[in-house]
Length: 356
Image (cartoon, rainbow, N blue to C red; front, side, top):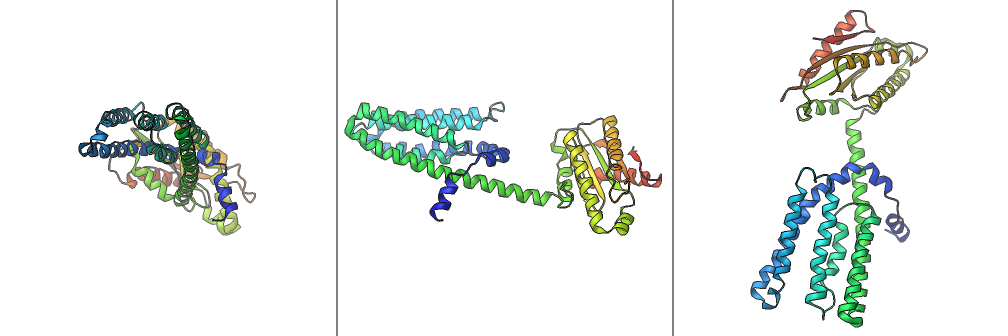
């Protein structure tokens, strides 16, 4: 990587990446909290074990034990359901607890030595979690200032100057590596997100595809809802429309209908999928029978306003409202609205039917 590209990467604006991948960032931080705490606690066992063989290290054991107990207590608190949504709070507190240990070792226990372990601390901390760079850097720089002041006060100008150079280098290195880690991770999230969208989205209508529909239906028993409302929508006489006006016009028709369903989805708690061809599926978990019927009527009337190729389109809709049951196949949820759809077609199309 040449210098211009490197500098461009370091100073790139990550605000949008953080915003677009907010859920992924939050999930990452939630997963990293217990790992960081446990690894740190296990690492603190090492100097305690060495203290058995080295008398000079035994006086530090209480500090290590106190830090371990504090971290385990924080780990326990982080698992409380009401506190789980705030992983960053625990990560920042974790940093302060570990910093207090290294500050004690650097200033109190070894005042005649240059700072040692705390140098590693300043490099590693920015790599532990994902947050806005200015917060991480302000956090690290604040601890650096505290250490420097205490170092000059208790160690003197000579050792304080050495600590200043060493810890400043560590802080800058930590900030730089942390920044690169942040950008790399966010770009990875963005790539994974785009790949997921490609796997789950119909390229023509930009609605969810059949794969995503089957995944969601198979997970309905994990939603906590008791019933599911399902709509199967079919554009009437679409094959004849395609043959008469051509596939390009047919595709434009499907694209426009996809936009219509997207706008309906934004205004209502319903997800739409392209089942295949001119068939679409809607899934809703918290709408009453009356609300679903009203929604279907809204879609039926709205499609007539599309006026593709100066032709008024119509559609037929089959609806079912059934209990969500564990370990049911996809057919269990689609069979009812499918039968209702065919009944709507038999009755002359441009109709809505509810399966009982």
